[in-house]
Image (cartoon, rainbow, N blue to C red; front, side, top):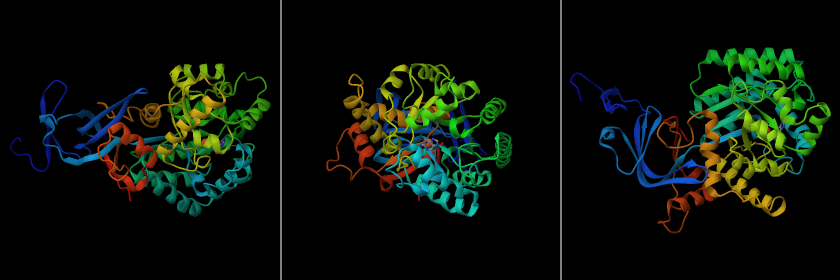
Length: 451
Ligand code: GUN
Ligand code: FE
């Protein structure tokens, strides 16, 4: 250590091999444990008793022995525990957390009008929102996800409350003020496209003024039936102006698709309506939830525009939507991750989404497409981590250069035998672990309080 340096400093070598000293940030450390992460959809990297090096929130890789240059870094010793990347929820609705489990005998359109819309109207009241959103964020903090892409409601002030709470949680989230100016009940339906766009601009300015580190806005037209042409067109312009990400729903359910066809008889596919208004990935990152019924033309559009698909198997089952052709999407190389779609889905954990993704892929093979191979555990894990993580950048793996979202699972009492191979421990954790087994988690190299 050079003379005159006080406090905690660490020596690090850069890519050219030059040694430098820097003040030790709390997001710079080494973590020892049994690692499992994805490189490709087909392959898992497993490293029993390895060392993950995290420098300023970013992975330098997982090593079998700790390289000398990192020996001075603080060490978190999780020997014997399973360490995987934090899970990514590519699609969920924060205000629907409060009524999970209700209306699970309805189809999508009935469920929206009987349950989802009346509940969301309550978020005009910020006191209601504060209480309900606190429960949602508390659940996320205690679960295995470190990243979420979130629908809020149309109400600007409540959305900001949610974003403040997400920021305080240490998780990394995109959250959206919903836009809807037709086919919605009073209290939820904005006056017109202009009013909705004005509120959206105000909300974006308020987000910028808050200088969040981990929370960012995402444009959120609910879906085509909820938004007039003027609103969709205006959001397309806004996306271009601010290079914003955008989320919506696409080709989820027969009832919804029939309504879109009625509204746009000239459109050759549902996705074509988003594209017509400049909302289909051309101007920024776009994620579309579901894509259960996308045909050849829509799939080609998704691919051409690098639109992410959020596969939400539990919701698709609960709301009688169908089974998405995930095998085809993987073969086509579409960008894809998993979504809980709470409250179409009941569970926030993306471990649960992995279970459901595998289960429905088997039903699809039995009932719909005999030639389509079901998902493997490797593929489901990839979608839950690196696949969805790509929407955030280099996220969802421990390869060098990836942001360190880390989940440590104490799986010692999940299996009667202690010496299972890492892959089998991962499988058990996916199906059997819950919040009680989470020993620690980090997002972007910063430790999250897990409650
Ligand atoms: N389509 C439009 N809104 C919604 C929603 O809240 N949930 C689901 N699953 N689909 C939608
Ligand atoms: Fe949804």
